[in-house]
Structure formats: structure tokens, C-alpha cells
Amino acid sequence: MLFHSTRGNDSGRKFSDIVMQGLASDGGLFMPDAWPQIKIEDLQESDSFLDVAKKVVPLFTSSSYSEEETVTILENTWHDFNHKEFVSIKSLNSELLVLELFHGPTAAFKDFGLQLAAAFFNNILEKEQKTAVVLGATSGDTGSAAIDACKKYSRIKSFILLPNGNMSEVQRRQMTTVDQSNVFTLKVNGTFDDCQDIVKSAFRDQDFMNENQYLLAVNSINWIRIIGQICYYFYTYAQLKDKHNKLSFSVPTGNFGNVFACYSAFKMGLPLEKIIVAVNQNDILYRFFEENNYSKGSVIETVSPSMDISIASNFERLIYDFYSNRDSRVCNELFNNFPTSSIQLNEDVWSKSKEIFTSVRINDQDTLAAMSETFNEYHYTIDPHTAVGFQAAQLLKDVLDSAIVILSTAHPAKFPETLKSAGLDINNIPNSLSRVMDKEEYSFNCEANQSTIIDYIKQKNL
Ligand SMILES: *Cc1c(COP(=O)(O)O)cnc(C)c1O
Image 1 (cartoon, protein in one colour):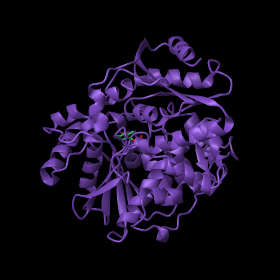
Image 2: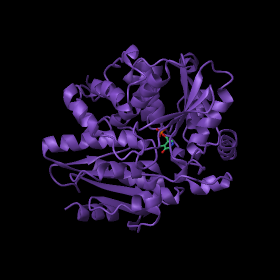
Image 3: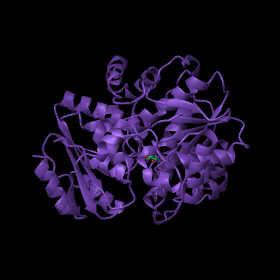
């Protein structure tokens, strides 16, 4: 199984290369040459999450690792979860279920993709006797998951840029309280876009790096993160298949990574009725799925900050695979001119969406109302991101024939301020979160200035 770019000019690539490279050299996103198939009848209710991962992950790694090697890496990949199965499924009633993905050390689903990424980064670095710098900007959960996943590997130094903005105190403290010599948090006086521009230009001009070093990206377009997320969709199916013929998934969505993992599982044989793309007021995806208009707006701050985006980076993969039958000319044309020209597909091509996708947009008021409602009705506290998925499921449950699994992407204790606005308290705070509240914060505070930030990295990366 090899990989190629959605834009057609970077192909025949091995797994370990695309993991270390992230973005394809022609600006596109890597895709597997074909969709590997999972024998759905082989999945058992007795399978653990790890059993399922051992069936899924080796399908993508075969160009660089034997199945045995991959399985060995997987045995040590996911760590510090406070649930022995890593994920847990809760039934609210016979048609609404919640897939809890927040039992990892940073209390958001991003631990699944980033712990898998870090395990393979480290393995490749050991094989090649190299070291790496991880560089990323974060508006919420990516930074903490990346820092936590990489901190135990001494070959990797992490530099994470935190913009001013809408993240919660818990989210910030998860990054600034890590007192470890290979972790560096930079508090940048600027927006997320300022930080993102600095990161992008650092990737273009890597002069500041040492020899025999990789500069690694941890943003959600790295295919390895998608693989980690595909696993829990199959696990959910294995757990529920005896009770439900078909499932729909309601996914609180930002950069479209989690939805694309769900779509990938579908292409690999997972039976499903609908994928609900649940968004907040940053509604570019809603406007595409409902109005055939993918156009960039400006970012609006909401109570679900990890979904505050102006474009959805992984969406190009869907245009490539689903709407254009893998025609890289189409991707080149559409995405080379985006966002200057917005994307609108031919009506008959676009209407294919209805086969599996539907999208719902939820505003802040309804998000808070959904949080109170789940508590009052089910004695169950959900975080604001999950609430967007919950509310979307509520609106669609009567029109869908299947049960709906709502992805719970973060633990509510990450957002105590928002819980308060919804009139709720938190009763059980995971240790990993309560710990960060009394620790000292460390960070390098600076302006959004390219050379200041590069100089800092150089100094710490001797
Ligand atoms: C990142 C994140 C999302 C959005 O996921 P995407 O894969 O970017 O669509 C949703 N909820 C939470 C809590 C997140 O951290």
C-alpha cells in the first residue's frame, strides 16, 4: 500500500515517508492508493479497542513495516488513559448513544491520532538515528495532545505556539504546566492565523534546523492521525452490531479530520446510514453540504473553540475521493484558486452528498441549551463540542432510520466556564486535569514575529 497526493504530483510514497512529511510536496494531501478492506464479519463484540486497531493499522503501514512490527508498536502506543478500553459507549436511550473519546491524558479525542503519530515518529527516528522538532500552532486541543504524546520521546523537541484567544484556562494550562526539557510553549501576542503563518513559513525555509533532523507537523492533515481515528469507528461497530443493524455518526466538526476518518471507515467496509457533519457558527462545511457553497469567511469565537475554523483542511480529501473520483486535475484547479475563488460543484456531482452526508449548524445558545437538556433528561454532562453533535442528532433522529452515535470529543471539565454558563457544575474532574490547576505555568512570551520565534527555537534546539 503506497500513498499519493490529491494534487497528482507526489506519488508512490511509503508510509514512513508520508508520516514524516505531513503535507505532500505539491501542496496536496496524501491518500492511500486504494482503500484497504476490513472483513466486517471478523469484528467481534469481544474485540478490545486494541484488537481492532491491530486489524486496521497494519493495512496502512505495510510499505514500511511488517504486520508483526506494527502490532508491537501498537502494544505501546496508547497510554495514560483512565479507561481500560480507551473508549466507552454510553446509551442515552435506544436511539441515541455517546462514544466517549475523552479518556486519554489530555481529555480530548486528539490523543488517539497524536499518540499513534508520536509512536511512529519515534520508531522512525530510532531506526534512522535522527532527531526531530515538532512545530505547531494550536487554538485548543491539538497542542496539548501533541505535547503529551511526544514528551516521553527524548528524540523529539516540541514547540507549540499559543495565540491570544478563546481557549479555556484548563486548555492553556495543559500546555504551559508541562515542566520538561523537550517541551516549549510559546505564548504569542497574535491571532491563530498569525501563528499559523509563522509555522508555515518555517516549514518552507528550514535553514534554522540542524543536520539529520526532521521538522514535523502535527496538524490534522497528517494521514497517521486519520488512521488512529478510523480504529474507534470500527470498534464501535463491533460493540453495537448485534443490537443495531446500521448506525449513523454525529461528529462535532472543525477541520474535517474526524469526519474524514468516519468516511474512510465507510470506504473500508463499515456499514453506516449517515454521517452528520455538526458545526458551530463557523459554518463553511454546512454551507457546502446544504448550499453547495464552500467559501472562506472569518473566524467567529464560539463556546466550542476547537471547532472555530475558517477553512476545513481535510475537506480536499473528500473532494478528491468522493466527488471527483480521484481526479487530481479537479483538486488542483479548485484548491490552487481557493480561497480567492470559492468552491461550487456541478449540481449533479454535489447532490451525491445526500447518499451519506448531512450537515447541521448549531449556534451558541442552542449549544448551551443542549448541555442543560442532556443533564436534565439523562443526568449526563457533556462538553460544548459534544453538545453541538448532540443537538444535531436531536434534530435528525426522527428522519433517520438508524441509531445515532454522537462523538464526545472532549471531557466537560475542560470547559468549566462554559458549563457554568449552561447552569451546570462539574462533579468528577479527571486527575490529569485537576493536576494542571495548581502547577506553575511556564512559557516564552513573545510578539508574532517570525525571527524572534525562529531565534528562540534555534537557541533551544542546540
Ligand atoms: C479538534 C476538535 C474538534 C474538531 O475535530 P476535527 O477533526 O478538526 O473536525 C472537535 N471537538 C474537539 C473537542 C476538538 O478538540
